[in-house]
Image (cartoon, rainbow, N blue to C red; front, side, top):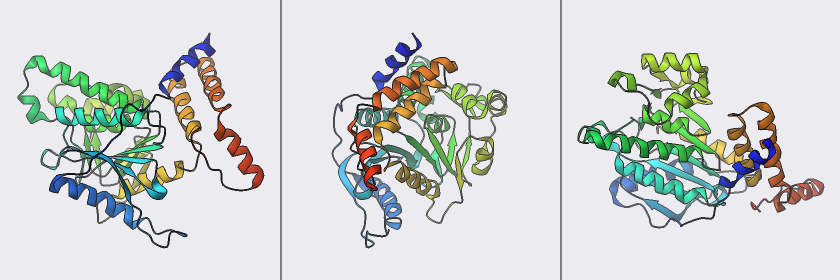
Length: 329
């Protein structure tokens, strides 16, 4: 029965793409957000064999005042960047941001060409300051619950994306901002970043998964301490506690964590995309159950890669002593 249970969890791994993203960044703020990401990309694109050619983004993107979504192109094809862009509100989570991020997540989750999603900020010094308290103060009490529920659903969907997700924390990630980062598979932070679940300062509790994901990241006792004290950590402290995987020195352009996240995403690109998705699914599902059931889930996930063309390509490439050319088939 455990094996059959394992097979049932696979249905979320592959779903047809419902819609494609189109359009381009509008307004001065969006132009700045694109320049920020392009500037980072350009500085890292000179590699052997590229002759220093500038790696461009595709025009396949959807943008708005609060979010800029970019599909990288060239050698970075397969990497998608979600850039939060609310400079006047310190990237606080608003109704519109929740709506736009939900649309962005829906657009990539069924797209088998997307290999990795990077969640970052396009506002220097800020990742996400949590809930938009100014907007929250204007809400009727009856509106608060449904809004928090939508935010929680968004963060859950982000965590359920079938491809790897990386949070690049180059600034403050507080409350809901850290909860978004916790939903990602990997977190990279600048040493100068500040992060914490600070909701108890407002006489509330983390409501978008923080009470569940933080203990899974750092352990139950430590998570209680951090939440009870509303403690804020810097990037180096967060790495020591296991809250982030990598802590990097911040650079002059303020995108040190994003650069490291991009390097990680590039490490994922050459690997078999179906295999990575199945590995993520096996880990995510298996960690929540007993070992016997987890092993059954792994077996079920392994069964999904056996009939793929990519598996045959991997064996052929190994035999011919050449790099494999995986297509996600």
